Image (cartoon, rainbow, N blue to C red):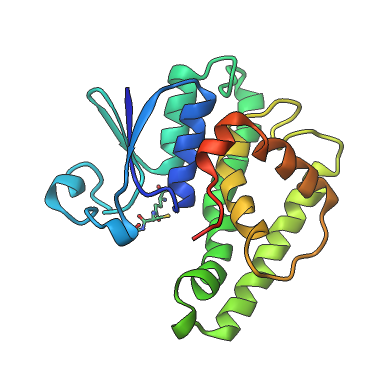
Length: 206
Ligand SMILES: N[C@@H](CCC(=O)N[C@@H](CS)C(=O)NCC(=O)O)C(=O)O
């Protein structure tokens, strides 16, 4: 059975839980990080020297970096489900996965921490800038989905949804003013209704 190390309030842990569910894999998840701690202990650092969550253990295989874990689960267990053998089609998912981690998540993080995690010490200017940057990134998603595609990678649900979805879930459930985005809203409602999304996307967000 897969073992997922990390608290479910982390979007990066949510990706891994979602991928395991979509691939039909049973898993045990252990709360580590944030208020649970444990991620700076030597035993954990031996598994992930960054001291961050998530980590995936699959027998002797131990992996850190959430997108790498999603790709591993998809390649190993998700053929025909969330793994596309065609390199060109798979690159569509890959680019949105990398974009999520390099662009969307960093844009959103200051607003999330300022509004949800540490409001007492938050810097309003930093929050405003983060909201503006995030909204600009979400405009990119809206424009992409407006081209008539059902999912980010094309006509099939895949790894892109798993990597981007948790951040969109977070944003849509945060107390921020958002532009209306009908295509993104339709996409979010479709993917959030999946059975495996129910395992991965907690409400309220914390
Ligand atoms: N690029 C890493 C980022 C991991 C990361 O930033 N994890 C955060 C939670 S989202 C973390 O471990 N924070 C410390 C903690 O939870 O104690 C990944 O995608 O796995």
